Image 1 (tube, rainbow, N blue to C red):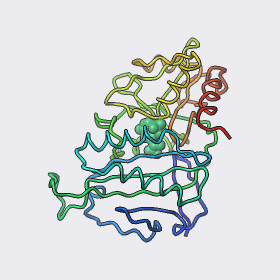
Image 2 (cartoon, rainbow, N blue to C red):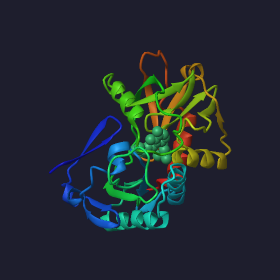
Image 3 (tube, rainbow, N blue to C red):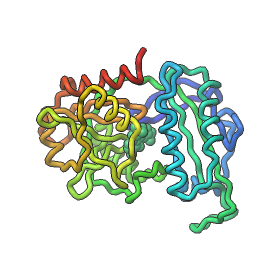
Length: 293
Ligand code: PDD
């Protein structure tokens, strides 16, 4: 059996059979295809679950504690009573079991399995956990993106598996041969469909400031602090669509994409420099800190 792993709109065929993929469900390690999940899991009926994507490179987990803290924040924000210490151990065990050098762990915590579907949950539910590890090539991807209205809910700071707004927008963009979207709300840039947004205007770097409309991306945070160590200031502020369309260079960040330059924004006549010296400097600083061969 071939397992298809989809990241962005790119289909990555991992010629791995499912039974080679290490996974864990409710604390039991198993092959992905042998895990049985109840259809009454609230992850299934309500997307009542949160998740993390934790990258590792050269056997080093990148910003592990930050991912765990964000997982904890997501659980707390949703009132999901989870054992985060146990989850941390499981994530590290998945990585070491897999013997994969470069990859990521997907790890999800749902509120649990209902006795019968009900919007109002019982306080007696036990959190349900699921994770798997897979290999991933951290290679530079140049992206074509579409601009779109941000149609998501107002708690995008929670890393919830309820991603229908992202899925709808990203698949509309896919129909225009795009790899990603940049979303805006009331003329303000929020983020990408599965990434945060950075751009250069007048030789200064900008990124939208954090709010409940944006996921506090860990790659975003690492880049801002590494750049500061090299005296490169990244301005975190409200960014309008007008700012973006005057940009000299745009890139998106995520745990799986790293810093991915945008070559084209559809229906915009921009001259984006995918090799802008300031962008390349940021990329090198980030690589030196986290992705050194
Ligand atoms: N997503 N914003 C959204 C909506 C995201 O889904 C992601 C990452 C980011 C970047 O966050 P980070 O730098 O912590 O990965 C921002 C992951 C990779 C995913 O859903 O696959």
